[in-house]
Length: 281
Image 1 (spheres, helix red, strand yellow):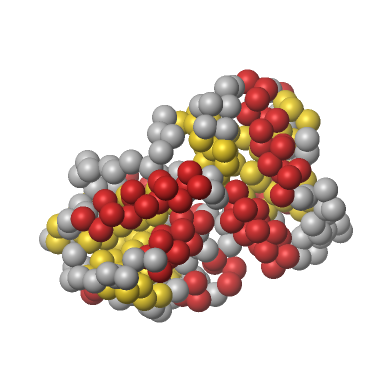
Image 2 (tube, rainbow, N blue to C red; image 1 turned 90 degrees about the vertical axis):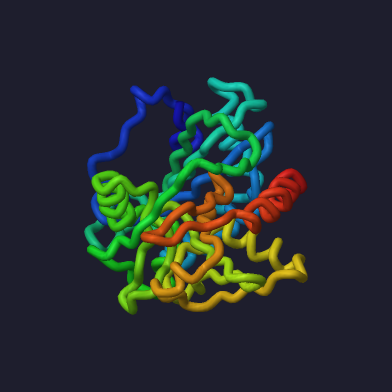
């Protein structure tokens, strides 16, 4: 079941115009959202990130695209086939309407909401072995566009293929300055004693929803100092802990990078506070 511009369609009846601009030019944005127990986690953050991203891409934001309207469209989609008490991974995709080549004829947008059920209503500690490596075949370009959740994710696709072929669980992406930017599916944090470091947005990392939550939580923890500064690959093997954040999994501790193995004590502290934050809104 998907929601196409407010109309519910069975998956097999869903279609895209063959001139779809998201397909042809990558002229699209998306939000990946976790819904648990009838609640959209961090919904205001998702909504305002989407609105800001649409403005940056010069999309025309419909008057109907209010926080309440899109929330209702998400729940309308979920209610059609599922129990709202379940847990879902929802994808809200927005693209500019058909017309034009590189220069669009119409800056208005269309949207699609799809979902899949998942099994973890809360954020849990994953303690299974998790090994990562650098992906160095291609680089993210630092700057504002790289911080957006656009559908231009070919580097993430190629990095994921590389990880699978080489039996890694994830890879870290670099920018053109050879600084560590993010993981294939989330933001990266390094723990070194009482200092916790994450790459800044101007290095090209995704403006992640969970990244924002973790930064806010750390701001309330006096035992730690957070630094948003560039991360060199050489720093990875000096860290006590590495962890990856995204809105679906929460916090994923890294077990090993090359010859270095990591603990997860800080992750355990943060997970407890993250679940409280998620329940509170």
